[in-house]
Image 1 (cartoon, one colour):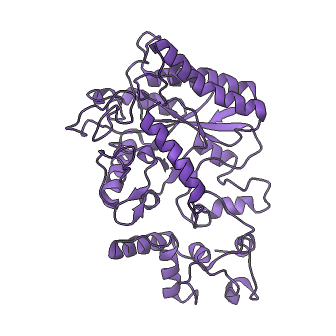
Image 2 (cartoon, one colour):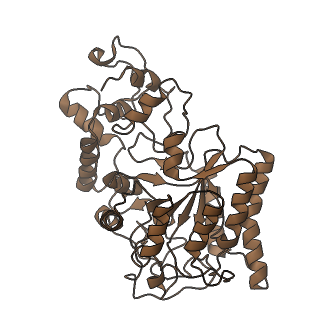
Length: 427
């Protein structure tokens, strides 16, 4: 594995121990890593494709990598979620970085499937593969038209160019979104930021970009490891080690607890790893075989959320489940980590997200950030609207716990949990 990437991952783990726990707020865009279910079901995602170059090493007669993944999924009656790019051929002038390092495919930008091979990857150049993905029932999500970083990532990608502000990020996402709609009649509903970079210049984040798109944030709870290079003396030894790195952690997790992966999203790559090998072409079959032996179904993320639960902490056993599912489609009731936290007391900001129209909540907050150039509380726009309407007297206090709700909404004043409020809400 690249020493830079390894050091970055280690540094992230160390920092996490000392930094304050991340605060989550009610948000229209939620980070989807897993859902609440007791059934043995998972979703697999594949980044950076489609790709019509063969596997590396090629042991399949020159068949395109994406075809190999689709063949394998079909063999095991599994469905995947393909997080695709549009076209990286505009990302020049550029030069390749060092093989095995994070910038292997380009110092200034990413190039898929490889530098100077842009015409073999992406939606623009792979009409046949896109049509096959859709025809066989898989899901497609938005990984950016050009796969340009949303903002700075100085440690790993210190020389990498990035978008400057919210508008170019949204324009890039919209370009791919429109391409899928106009060419294939397909509407994407989720996106994953390139390299998971969330901060955007001007006080914005990827959540603001996805709010504009109407997307959910496609994340993952389990790393399938097909993207990580491992260096040994020979290509074959390296490949075997990389395949083992895909299969053994999954095997150990399931041996320790057969339900360990229930409801989770697994991360994979539809392309080369940093050393230009494709262990996923070989390891995916072993992963699917292992999952099948434990009775798991592999479905799209969309199916995972629709058939089981769209939430990370509430499932179908919840008495008000169907109402909550319907409500989350039009109102902000779920936290950014995809949890409902039904037994927590509701704050004024959370109540405002329930009451305010989505367009007002998003539009006002974005306008405030543009005006000030600084981040704003996630619920600011909704609270501003509620204050203007005279609905909430204390709507501008984002951290105040609701101790007295207006009686015309919820009856006598007292402390209310989020569960109680949603049960009483009539729209």
